[in-house]
Structure formats: C-alpha cells, structure tokens
Length: 282
Image (cartoon, rainbow, N blue to C red; front, top):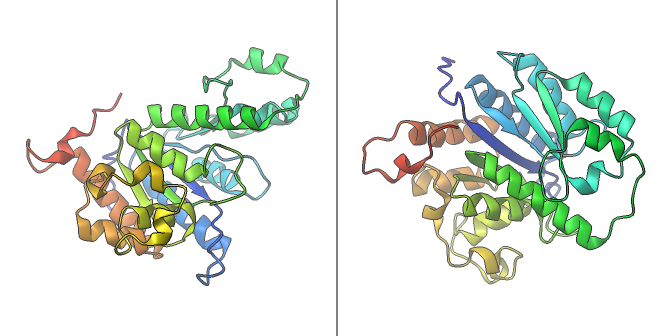
C-alpha cells in the first residue's frame, strides 16, 4: 500500500465500544477490536493523530491502541494517540497507577486528565487530587459530556462503531452523544453500523439500513437526529457508499470506505463541491 500521509495535521476521533448485538450477529468482541485496530493503524499510517476516550481496563481497547501507537508511530517525538480521561473515571482511580501508565505510553501516546469542564489538568493539579471522591449521577453525566464535547471540538472527523444502548452512565449512550457533539461541531461523522449497538441504531435513524422504522423512532437517537439526513454526516461519501459503510462487517472494506471519504474531503473535486467545506488542519 502506497502511503502519502494525506491526513498529516488532522485529528480523528475514534468511538468504539462493546455492542450488545455482537452475539446476535454471530460476532465477538475480537471482531470489534480488530476493526478498531485496523482503522487506527491505517489512520496513523496516513499521518492522523487519534483521539480515543476509552478507559484503562486490562486487555481493553485502550490498551490495544497504546500498543499500536508504539508499533506504528512514524515520529515518536510527538504522540499519535491522545487518550483523554474524563473526570468521573480518573478522579476515583489510584493516581500512582495512572501516573505510571501515562509515563509508560509516552511519547507515542499521551494521557490527559480532564477537569469537570473537559479541560486537561496540569499534572501537578491532578496529583494533588489524591483522595477518591464519591460521585453522583449528575457528576458522571456532566463529566462525560464535557469530555465528549472537548473531543468533538478538537477532532476534524469522528468514526463511530458499536456502543451500548442501555446501562450507560452519561446523559445518553456514549456513541450517540459523541455523534451529536461531532455534528454540532460540523465535523464529518462516519457511522459503522455492521456491529450493531448505538452506531447501528444511528444508521437506522439516518435511513442507511433501509427506511426508518417505528423501532428506530423510539431509540435514544430519535429526538436528536429525526430532522437530519445523510447529507448532515458530511463524510465525502455518496449515498451508496454510506449505506455500504453502514452495513459492512468486513474490516478491509470499512477501512477503505472511511479513507476514501476522508481523502475526498482533503482534496475535493471542485470549488463548489460540498466536501470542500472541511476545515483546514490546525
């Protein structure tokens, strides 16, 4: 594969988490993990910096991305992966372990510890917060929303895969809120729906898996996205390609479609093309 690093200077957010539909689809978490790693690998190879707000569970997606960053970083003097940790997660954790983890992943990746407003905390400030505190449901909602809004503010595009539809701690399912914040920021949003979950629900809401159904209108996404169309996704892909991305479970195909859309946004066909609206890096 010829790599021209056409995403140099761009920041891409990845939102990939467990999908409750995997078993029904004859899939396992390994399939989701493979999709995440392959997307990340190709994006890094093309020069992108990745934003991923996952937690630090042993063997989880965040750990796999940290390992990937070391293997595929072309310039380890700067991070190719940024892992923002929201206030509700890091403030109740053991700081010594978090500090050790942050040092272990540098310089190919960096961990950020966000305050309740979503602003990265200086290390000295975070180190002073040594006593775990008891958080309310409102604290979780505010902290997670702040993190997702900060990620959307910094990212040039968002890629969404899987995600819970219930049992979440925020105001709404995480992938749904991340899509909403990215669209509010007028960023391209790539919906990979073949693994089900929240991303699949969003694909249904946008009519990418067939006509909108009564069930899709009852989803947590319905009130947010009901008046939007596929054009609001701003992906650079045409309708046929969007539908293929929405249903595909083939990792190579998913990667190819996402990169195709991003490449069109970087180099639109003409000045009047809607794809030329993608903001310049930085």
